[in-house]
Length: 310
Ligand SMILES: [Zn+2]
Image 1 (tube, helix red, strand yellow):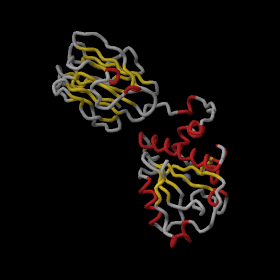
Image 2 (cartoon, rainbow, N blue to C red; image 1 turned 60 degrees about the vertical axis):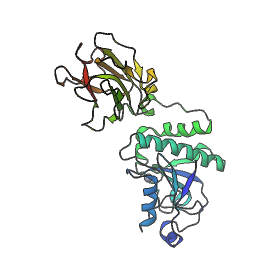
Image 3 (cartoon, rainbow, N blue to C red; image 1 turned 180 degrees about the vertical axis):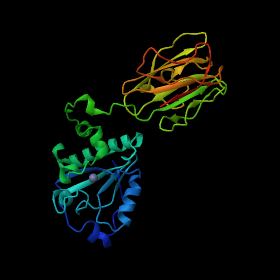
């Protein structure tokens, strides 16, 4: 991965990185913030706090703020091995999590694998803030499973994964669900919406829906739709989700031009609450929970104008 340098000004070395360093380890952090790597490093460079770190990684890039031959203040262990021998890596967007964080963590795993290779280090050199001061950091990476994160690095190194219990591989919920619907009247896919915005829904109320696709942050979502006067169509998996794709029939549930009257949703993680807007009745029907597999949203024969998920 390419690294963009925005190094701290040498006039601030006495505050940010006063000691020369020969690194012996990597120390992983989460920012507990929702700022980009660029902004994390800019802020660190600008302020006069005795807080510093070598790299910030987000969903797009790796930005460096402290040279690798100087120490940084991040591990909370005074002049211990964390602060004096550790290469500090902050993973961005951990406060709210979601897609950006998932991406940032993937980039961090890639970048760490690269650092290990360059130095001929093993996975044992990857440590976490928590190891030095007991602080619950990297908080979201720990929530999602530390061994799982190490496995992401092992995968980059081409090493065998260490088995971890399913429960700690990924949280047991869908995370943010991104979804969009096809408007038969306008004959086009409408903009994506997401389940973290309680006011969002897919569709134009009053216009009949012809297609639906959805993808969660974790696990998979499967959708099955029924068309007016037709039958239940095949289940479609979020694995094939492709935003605005008009041609890949596996990427959405439905048939262009045919009106959907019933929708069923299943998820492999947690559950999805969903409901349909009945265009004929002119109102939203009751919420349905995906764990209730015999349930569906909609009234047979009445075209659906909107689908909402949470
Ligand atoms: Zn930390």
